[in-house]
Length: 428
Image 1 (tube, rainbow, N blue to C red):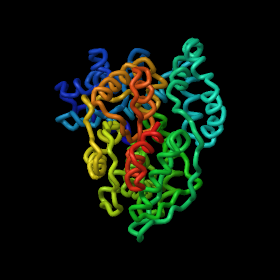
Image 2 (image 1 turned 90 degrees about the vertical axis):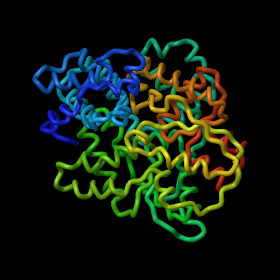
Image 3 (image 1 turned 90 degrees about the horizontal axis):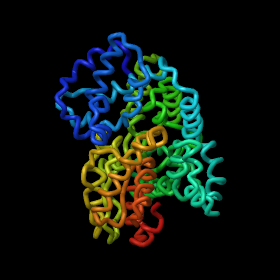
Image 4 (image 1 turned 120 degrees about the horizontal axis):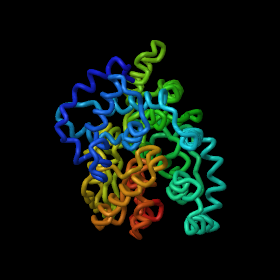
C-alpha cells in the first residue's frame, strides 16, 4: 500500500464539498460530521500533524465501513480507500485497544481466514442448527449478554447443508475457449460451497477448463481492510504463488476480487514480489466481468423468476462492476430484474463490520431489507458471501420470504435448465 509519505498529498485532495455525505452509510444513520468521510479526513489530518490517536478518534475510524461509496461520489478524486486503509494500519500499530476488544478481534482473525478452522466449525454448527438449539439460544438472549459480536456471528450463520467438495480440475464442455484458475475463498468455500460448485459448472459450460488449486488459502481481504497489513501481505504472497501460472483468475466474492486487484499496491515496496503481484492483479477478474469479456456461448433456458439485484460495495464501488451482472441476468429468458432503492448505501456487512459494529450493521441491514422487500422480488441476487448473510438475516428479522442466491447460481440454473423451483430451493 501507499507509504506514510503519500498521506499529506492524499489528504489535500479533499475540498470538503460534501458530495460524499448522502452516500456515506454512517452519516445517513447518525448525521454526525465526524462519522462522514470528510469528517474522518479532518481527523486524519490532525493525526498527520502530530495529534495522537485518541479513543474517540479511533472510534470514528472504526465506525467507517470502508464501503467506498464516497470514492464513487467524490468529484475531486479523493482516494479515501487508500486513506482509510493507511489510517487503520496506523491504528493497529499505535493504538492500545481494551483487552476485551483485542480478544474479540483476535478471535475473528484467527478463525475466518483459515479454511480448516472454519471446516472444523461446520459440523458442530450444523448440529446446532438441526437440533433447533439455535432458536432456543436466540430466545434467551444469552449470547447478547456474553458478547454482542458473538451473538452477531451466531445470527449471521447461514443454514448449513452438506458441503460438496470440488475436484482440482473441471473440464470445459463443448470445446475449449479458456483456462482459468478459480478462487474458492474462506467463507464462500465453507459456508456457501454451492456457489463455488455453480461457478465451476458455469465456467465449464461456457468452454473453460477450470483449475481449482487444492493448496489455496485466504486472499487476505479481511486483514487488508482491517489494517492488518503484514498479515494481508503474507496471505497475498501465498495467493500469488498459488495462481501466478494460470492465464486468468476468476473470483466470485466481491471483497476477495477487490483485494486481489490491490496486490499491486499492497506489495509495491517488496522488490521480490512487486512484479509478480502486479501480474496477478492484472489478470484477476470477477466472475461476471470475465463472462461478459468471454461472451456467451451456452444456451440459456427460460427462468421465470423476478429477482432484485444487490450491488456489493466491493464490486460496484471498489471494482466499478455494475453493468456486467445485470447484462448476464438480462440474457436469461423470462427472468425479470428489479432495482433496489438506494443501491449505493452499504448493507452493513463490510467484511468484519457486522461482527465488530453489530448495532450499526443491523440498522443498515434493516434499511436494505426494507428496500429489497419493496421490489416485490422472489429472489435477491448478491455477489458477496458477507452481503448474502447480512441481508438474509435482516430479511428473516422482517419476516420477508425472499431467498438469496449468487449470480453464478442463477446462471447455473438457466444453463442446466433446472427451472425456477430448483433455483429458489437451492438458494439460501
